[in-house]
Length: 264
Length: 332
Image 1: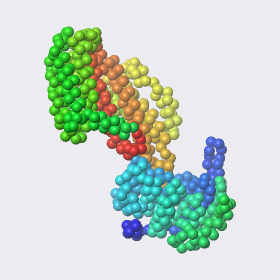
Image 2 (image 1 turned 90 degrees about the vertical axis):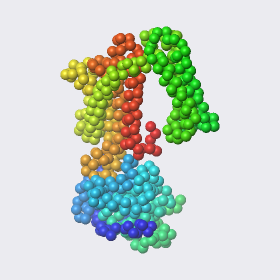
Image 3 (image 1 turned 120 degrees about the horizontal axis):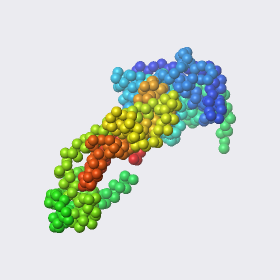
Image 4 (image 1 turned 120 degrees about the vertical axis):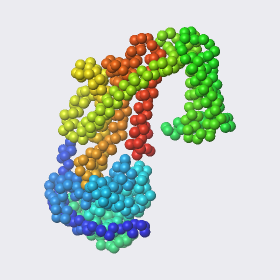
């Protein structure tokens, strides 16, 4: 942990602001058009940690893809720092639910991907080992992905994103496939990284508790096609406790808004 | 699978020892001495030449096994394969004995068609220079054909797997022509090309290129889409996506194509040499058969077996270099 604190970057880049204006998106499937997002209006302040909460498969991941610039929205516009998003950029990095590490590259060379693609490997290569140290994988830098556990693989994916010093981190249920214990550890690690680095974080999750523990704003989405059905600010100081009565009250409120009963 | 064969080999090795003495080494020496005794003890039905030398080589081999029987446990890593193949050494001596008796000594097997081991030895000693030239000619033709074939095949395969337009025009042609055996092109190739050498190179290239095209194309086309998304968000351009994502991801497939291409290149190489070459192992086989020199034919076949399996082995080494990351994922 000492090493993590010591290697926190002094040149923390300010977070990016994100704005979605009346964004709608439709997928063209062989069975016909499938609307996934409907009239999304959303403004995200720089440096904030925002959770997008809603049922799985509702279209939240699509929203992240649009913000990442992997595809253009069918209608409306996506702005980053007031400029229309037209293509992917290393300042807006997406972390997927699967680590999607390249199996033919070691952890170190996976983390090197961004710098290599941007032709900055020679000048900024030292950042690779720093990023690996930040996610506490230094001992596994030369391991291949299949030799890592699920949590380690996801930490490597996180390092691969962080090495680019992103101003916006798009997290698509990155902890969704991890076991409960690893998940709890990774939640606090993720929060620590956000606090150190000052990037804007946009986390897609369907875990209410996770959203409330991490985010300072929770946006609630409906079933597909996803619409924003409400939002809650979480004004609790960190570190937060899952047993905090305020948090439990918020959780109940959110579940009600999503139309889910808490009693079985 | 690998584990079970390993334990089987280990058990084999353990039972092969009496104290520090390698029992199978002694048995191998005995079987080789038996073959030597049969070789010199009885007269050949017709003189084959080199009977004495053959027996001498067997005795030297037997001597080596006796020495190894007492020292192999001290050799460590080098000794392991020798011990592992112990039963093979014994069987080889018995095989030589049987071969001697059935051909040279009793003449059971019809005479011009079957040659005793000393017959092959005679060929290697008297015709080695021509065999060497033939090996070099075969290697030249194979090398030129195979490497140009896989180079073109790889590039075309990547293009077919990557580009929709290329695939639209290319795939139907590939689907039509791909299944045609390369040997079917022989008559027209010899007609179209100015030299038979050029035609032969083309045929070997075709035989090795087609499987590489097919497997490379399917490999590139089936790369996990998320790999591209990851690379794009990290700032990759098209060139990077092709060279650093699509190709490495498709490499396991490419190697399957290379192995298939290698095997079919051998087939076409030999046929092409039989039909149109002045030298080469295929030509040698054809030429010696015409003179009923079957000892020469077998001698060339053994060389060919060593050559082809050697090249396959080389490709395996290359694959292990490039696809070392698959260890623990894929069992070949």
